[in-house]
Image 1 (cartoon, rainbow, N blue to C red):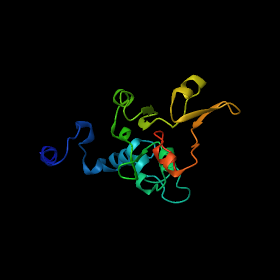
Image 2 (tube, rainbow, N blue to C red):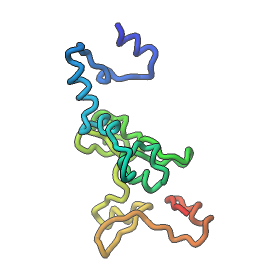
Image 3 (cartoon, helix red, strand yellow):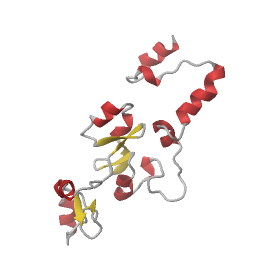
Image 4 (cartoon, rainbow, N blue to C red):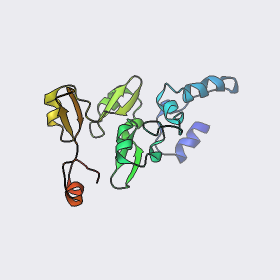
Amino acid sequence: MAREALKSISSTVQDEHFADATVDDLDSVLWALCDPHKQFGALIAKSTTGSMSASAPCPMHLEKDVCDADLSCRWSDRLLACTDSGCLAHCDEPTCSGDHANLCQWMGDSCFKQPVCSHTQLTNCSVDPGCDWNANEAKCEKKKCQHESESGCVEDMVGCDW
């Protein structure tokens, strides 16, 4: 009865987001929810101390590059802020792998955005407009801005920081 009452006042919820549990079972239910090796547990267990790179909740990343480096976050040009990646909403591999708009990738038992310029082949790296192949290190890297003016940098469709 409580489940149906909650469903009627909340946004669309999937049945697997509910768990029937007794008070005696709460310890194991909460551990399953807060397990840092699971998707939600990893998000709520993120440290907010030390290096901010990939270790803080997305809104704590104030710089685009730091935000983009965190696989659970994405930079919003509309909000000029770091927000949660749309990939985090996917609970299963087929849905995750099918989300090409958010560039999602199933990793372990969670869905994250694909790492930026993670191509291992020159041909794949070369066709990604935001990447350049580093021949000296034989790896794909984020393209560096080559603009000499602020306006040229801002107008770059790949996304440069001035």
